[in-house]
Amino acid sequence: MDTSTNPTNPNPTVQVRRVLHPDELHRIHTVIRDAADTRQLLGTALRVLYDALSTDTESEARPIAPGRYAIPTSQWQAVLTAMTQRAQAWGTAAEVGLELALNLMPAHYDDPTVPAPHLPLPDYRPAEFQITLTRDAVDVIAACEAHLGQLRGCYGHASEIYQDALHSWHRILAAMLTMNTGRDTQVSKDGHLSLFVRTSSGLVYGLIFHGATRYCTSDGCDALIADDGTARPAHTGAAVRDHEHTPSYPVGAPRPGTWSFHS
Ligand SMILES: [Zn+2]
Image 1: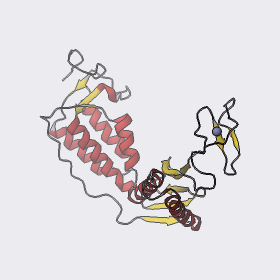
Image 2 (image 1 turned 135 degrees about the horizontal axis):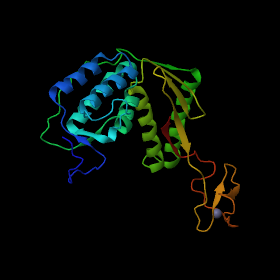
Image 3 (image 1 turned 30 degrees about the horizontal axis):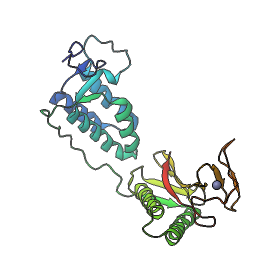
Image 4 (image 1 turned 180 degrees about the vertical axis):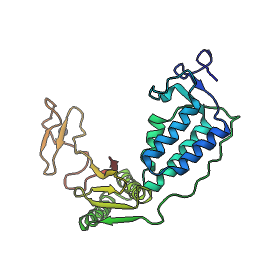
């Protein structure tokens, strides 16, 4: 259905807005299953999808403009899920899912009358994963645990400082262990409390500790306070009052902070 002249079309750039037929879904499912690598998966499956949606009037040579097309959300989700699941064979599911959702898939629209298509695929994840930690990385993990213990001891188990740090640490460790990024993962040190991760799918990322900045909490004082207690302006021209500063966390106390992912 061409809705370019449809006044109810919510997105004026969408020119083809329709349900994929079962035989079109079957062709897409087949090329997803038969893809040999990530590049082929993205190339062939999307080609089949857009060939189905393209109208005869369009030039074959014209680059695909995903925003010109829209399919029902149920079908959109099923195709995205199938392609992401297929990419697990190569440890690229995260990148494929993101790239599809943000850039490559057509637009979608809600149509509750269109059922979610069944596009079954086997579990493509490798049967085993290997994570290699350098000796330094093991020391970093021990240091992170020790730092959490210090935060708990200083600020208390129920404190926001300890709870935020603990949950962020738990979250990134669990993500590193459960994210399928290929058969092999190498973890090394990237700082006193930070790790560097290189995966066999080519993805690299950091698990980085972001320590809080110690500053004076008094009104009208823009001082940063160093670990030795000395104060300096937070930025050029910032006012530093001549008074007993009130540090946002005590000098000599363990540094609050959280861990997060950085690609
Ligand atoms: Zn101050």
